[in-house]
Length: 325
Ligand SMILES: Cc1cc2nc3c(=O)[nH]c(=O)nc-3n(C[C@H](O)[C@H](O)[C@H](O)COP(=O)(O)O)c2cc1C
Image (cartoon, rainbow, N blue to C red; front, side, top):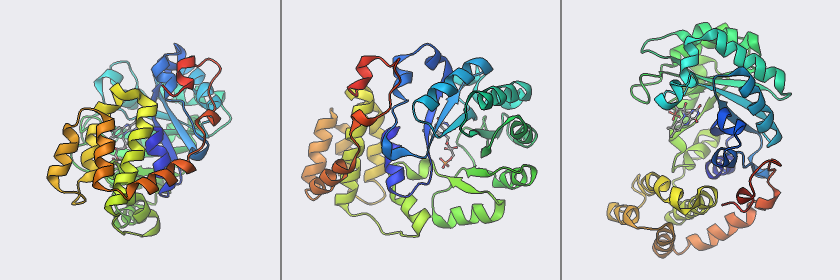
């Protein structure tokens, strides 16, 4: 999500990555898929992640995401969701190293920017497939590897086993990025020190909590004020509305209300009230009422956003996307 990436950059993330974008969706110029290629001036350096199982289609998709502004093309060999794996994409490719290498090779040949791969440890619990496949992917052209050392079967249960990250670091001579359960500076430092990884990636820890990024990067663990929390949430709501439209945004945002307003920041009944409001407009009005000081912060944040008409959009994009709808 652009809203999440932009926020991450403001709070110190050195590199942000898009959600996975379907190469088949790009091939068919699917309007919703093309909407993921919205790239703002303030997002760079930016990786755009693509998924699929056909080397040629992935190569075409890679060219498109570079045209849209990606500084890095990231390939998804980690998605555990059945809808994706049943098409031979995502984590399944860890079981089909020849095809995985063909994909990386085709994508690396197609674009001039670095190509990176994001993977899980393997499909089944205890799998070490990433250690067999990883070095071959580097040989095929991957410039970095990001490892989320859970199996696909685990989904998000249990813990990320970063001893595998340490083993992978030993096996390849490209930077390895560690993903999984990094939520604090102490955890980031320990993962970096024990694995030799070049960087950590933060996912869930930053959802509704960009302040975690500031703490990880600068060691500044100051709790945000209610005004700051309300302001960040309001901006996130507005940006998400712009990206997804009211209908998709209102459902999508519900989880975020809890993530922002929880952690003792707002009383529980307030959080429950917000989640039950019907429209995002009502949510925004209620947040402003609860934290009037948020208004000037939102105004300042919005003033710093680049003009949306600055975004690079592909010629083939349907007109409706230009308006941000
Ligand atoms: C809601 C959600 C969506 C995700 N989408 C993607 C994705 O599109 N591509 C990807 O490579 N990983 C995706 N991930 C996995 C994360 O990149 C990350 O590897 C995983 O969440 C573990 O890191 P964390 O503990 O910091 O969240 C997603 C995770 C979550 C929770």
